[in-house]
Image (tube, rainbow, N blue to C red; front, side, top):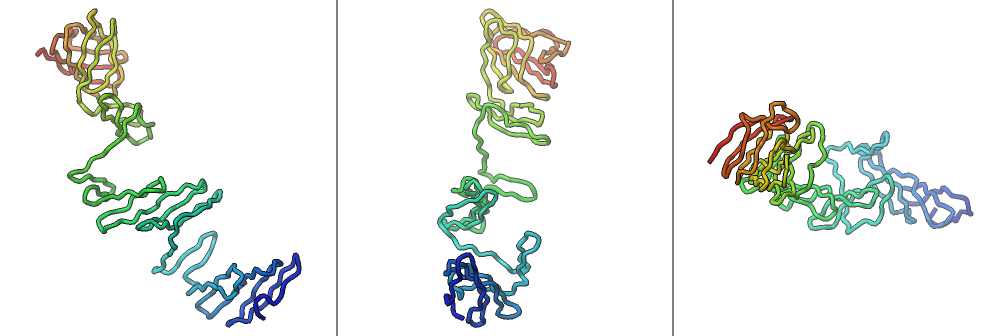
Length: 306
């Protein structure tokens, strides 16, 4: 029979046979205008996907259904030449708790986007404009970066910079939290800022040798390192330094003095952050003292009077 011939009573539904070619079993709900194709088959190799519109002739065809099947919660495509085509769109308006959306945004070129259940979009792939560029995912839903083969390459687990390449990092006050088996390179927000390395035991090491100036306070007996090379000015009332803090095991420290107001105590007891010298050290203008830290205390490497 033709579509729309019968209207079922309230709280009832009808199953009937549509007189198309081939004819099709249809279910009509009690609203009277919504028809749902139950199933249809054109031949042994093709199938049809049920439609959810009021037009029972509006059927979608599934060619070679053996290439596409659903099993154990997974939708699988068997054909080795299969591909998924998604029509581009400007945006999507919905998100559902516990679900994610994959869609194609109508940028130029188009972008594959994932929307999480908090309605945040994540670009999965930004299409390369040339055959020599590669896509870098972005997580702000707006921009995609490019990994250009002329400046930055990744192969066999190695990331390599080209001749004009560089790495820029924002400075920060403290090291990132340690992760077992990993180390972190970062930039400390000194003035000027300093390149740092932190190991997985939260030990920080200064990597750059730019001089850092320090003026000791009155009666100061200790100071913290702020770099590998420090220029020390003593207090007019003189200073006797017993400890130097803030170092990591294996770190070397070069101290350049500009006056004769600083004495460093020779401590052979190797208590925390103490300094074991070849002899007691008293500064003078242009004297240099070089030390190394073993994780507990300092040891003298050399000294010079210039």
